[in-house]
Length: 316
Image 1: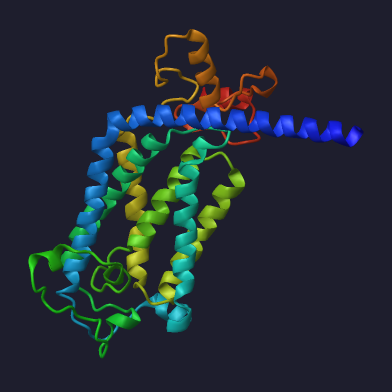
Image 2: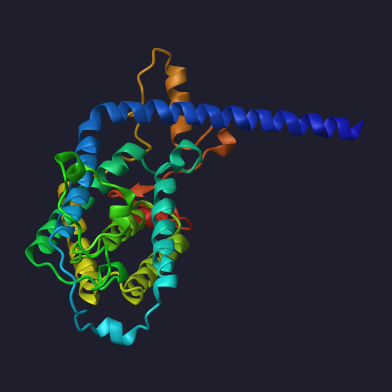
C-alpha cells in the first residue's frame, strides 16, 4: 500500500512539474513572438548580411592564386597537426557555436531566465555584421596565398573556375564554405567565437562556464594556426579587432531590458493571468516557495553566488 501511495505522489509531482514547464514554454513563446514582430527587420537584415559575407568570401576565391607559404612565427612555434587531424579545430569551434546557440534558447525551458532570445540575437548579429564588414574590406584589399592544405600549389581546389551563370555565382554551397581560399585576414571562426564568448561574458551567469569559454577560444586560436587554416596575423588581428568592434557597437545599442520588467509581456484582460505570465517568464511559478530574486545591474547580469547586496554595492 505504501508503494502504491508513493507511485501516485510521484505521478502527481511529475504531472504538476510538466504542467508548469508547458505553461512557462507557452508564455515564453508568446513573448518572443511579440518581440519578433517588432524586431524582425533587424534579424532579417543580419541574416542577409551573413549571406553577403559568404558571397564575398566565395568571390575572393576566384582571385586566389596559390603560392609559397609566407613566413609565420606561429608556424615555427606550433607543430603542424597534419591534414588528418585538422578536424580538431573545427570540433572546438562547433562546440562553442552550438553551446552558445543552445544557451540563447534556454529561457524557453529553464526557470533562471535572464535574457530574451530575439533581443540577444539582434545584438549578436549587429556585432557580427560590423566585424564581417571590416573583414571583407581587408581580404579584398590584399589576397595572400592560403596556407591551408587545399589552397597550396598543386591542389585542384586552390582556384575556382569562372562561374557559368549568375545562379552559380550567387549560390553558396557547404563545400565552398569548407574549402574556401583567399579570405584570410581576419579569421571568421574567431569572429563568431569571440562575439559569442563576449556576449555570454556579459549576459551569462555561470562563472565557471565563462572561464571555460575563454580557455576554449584561446585553444581554438592555437589550433587554427597549428592546422594551418590561417596565418598567425589572421588570428591576432581578429583578437583586437573583434573586441574593439563589439565594445563600440555595444555602447551605441540600447541595453537589454531587465526580465523583471513587465513591459514586454502580452496584455491580457485578466490581471491575474498577466501576473501569472509575469511570474512564469521570470522563472517563478505560482508557488511562492519557488520565488527567487532576479538581479541585473546596469545591464549586466549578476553571476551566481553573488548576493543582491553585493550587486547594489557594485552598481553604486
